[in-house]
Length: 229
Image (tube, rainbow, N blue to C red; front, side, top):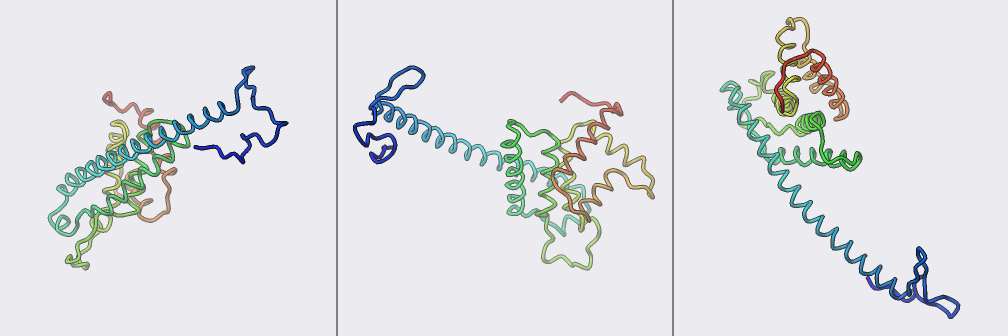
C-alpha cells in the first residue's frame, strides 16, 4: 500500500513534526509509514493464504459429507421394499444443496460462538433441517403417482432422521428405540412425534438442537448403557 501524500501521514506545512512518539519511542513519520505499508501487505497476504486454505478445507469437507450421506442412503434404501426402491432415487444436486446449507449453518454458529467444533446435537439438527427442506430423495417421473404410500411420501423425513440420529450418542439412540418399542399403538413415541413435527409443523434448527439436548439429558438420567466414543 502506497501512502498518498495528501493523507494525514504527510507533512502539509512546516508546523507539522516529522516525528511521532509511541510508547516513549520516537519514529520518523516516513519510517512509520513504511512499517504500516509492510504490515498491511503481510496481513493481506496472510488473509489470502488463509482464505485459500479455508476454500480447500470447505471443498474437502463438502465432498466427505456428501459421500457420508450417500452411503447412509445406500444402506437406508436397501432396507425398503422393492416397490419403494423402484419409485425413488437420490438427487445428487439437491444433496449438494443440503450439504452446503448445513455447513453454512455450522460456520455461522462457529463464528458466533468462537468454537472450533460443533457438537453432536447441532450436527444432527442442521442435517435434519436441510434434508427436510431440500428433499434430496425424489420420486421417479415414470412412477405411477396413484401408488404412492406413506413410506414414499415421508421418505425424506425418515431419511433425515436416520442421518441426524447417526450423530447422536449410543445412549440417545438406544433410548429412542426402546421408547418406541414400549409405546402402544394408540400412544405416540418420541420418534413418531418428531416425525409428525417434521411433516406438519414449522421448525428451526435451534428447536431441534434443544430437543436433542433434552433427549441427551433424559438418556443420561435413565442410565442407559453406552460405549465410550
